[in-house]
Length: 457
Image (cartoon, rainbow, N blue to C red; front, side, top):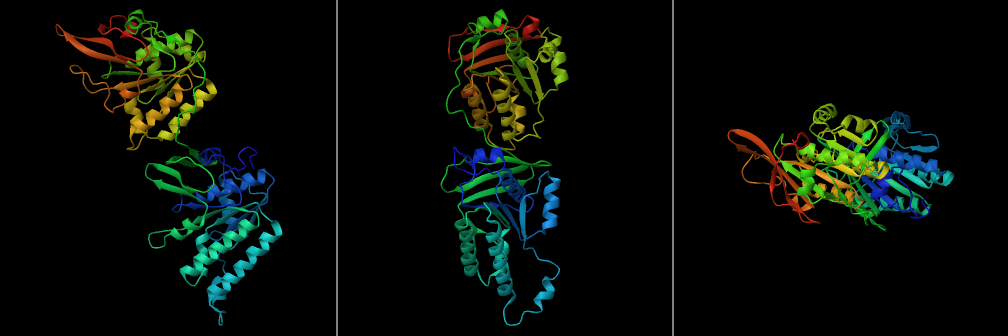
């Protein structure tokens, strides 16, 4: 039990974060989900965490036999030593015993046997944690729905009165809903599996707050990994709001010195106009100050980015070698938005990166699986700027020239600074120009400047 929160850890750090510290002791929690959504894996995390804390733990398995449960758990890296099992799954004698019932119905006889086994096990080991998988098996030992509800309530009360914190699963379908179980528990954790991935959400949690929303989840060979939706920091980390130079005199002149630390800058323009190059310029200057930067590139390989920058005298290769720059290629269809947010959060918190660039917002949008990109970008940018990180968002627009359109997805409100690059034609030749459309913390030059030097191409 955590001495600060008074809660029991679930065994999954990120789930504890969602539950504001873990499970409230001596309560009952329902894990809901279709087959294959990870219910048993979460239960094993819960029990093995108890073993680590020298607690007595009990797994009541009513579906799979113990040997199969242990084998599956060990394949995922769980050490089941110290976990007590009460195997109530049907065995090979079940059908033979059915023929012997004459006075009592099979449900009544099986219920009496099951009850006595549970009471005996609880009295002998006195577990602090109990995982029951699945509780809906009791439904088949009851003569009707009222009897099941009464027995399930009584059973859960018995377990908590014995000092146990209980995690139990349900098997449900449209024909056999588990609405009654949702009413009788203290908390509900919902697990979903769909074509694009897995989600976990909490819909009920008595006695504590929790993080709302769907949180991305993966089942790996090492168990369950959960990626909570990123929330902006409660307060700002102390930092000096100084001006950061691009190292390009013409650009700094447009910006009246550069962009401010801890702000968000959108660099917008059509394909190939030099948006990434402009962003890298700020990172080049940061490296000269001994500050680390990171680029998350959704559309370009690390090798291509290095070669392109080196060709215009931006020493990206040496910046990477000295640890002042990290280039992280991201496959958007592999990462959920929550996974990517945790990747960024880890780098900011552990590596102390001062500039983070997302290249580009259109590539990032692919990882959202149809969700609104604005809310996710809002969370991730606000988290970073409150940590004093300078954020650069590369945004591609479809128009090559003509009318200005800052973004295609309505994120311009996030920006403290907006740089716009565009093409223009003169005498049959295509040229590039750069201008500033917005600068929240200072004035700026209201003109477009032709990109003439290689560093601004």
